[in-house]
Amino acid sequence: MQQIASPLQGWEWEYLSPDLLTEIKPVEISKLCFILNGKLVEVENPDPQQLLVHYLRESGHTGTKVS
Image (cartoon, rainbow, N blue to C red):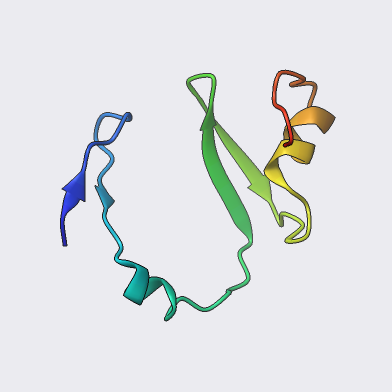
């Protein structure tokens, strides 16, 4: 698989072809981790129906838009 550039030092991303995406099955996760404004955010037992943009707004981050 082709590697693509990562904006986060030490992280590696891989290119997934559209054919592989059809094989991905939903799974339950107990923790969601992401980088927000340069800081690691960990959300325990995230609601699978909640959009990230709504989580960010509820956390006081109002600059994100929904189109």
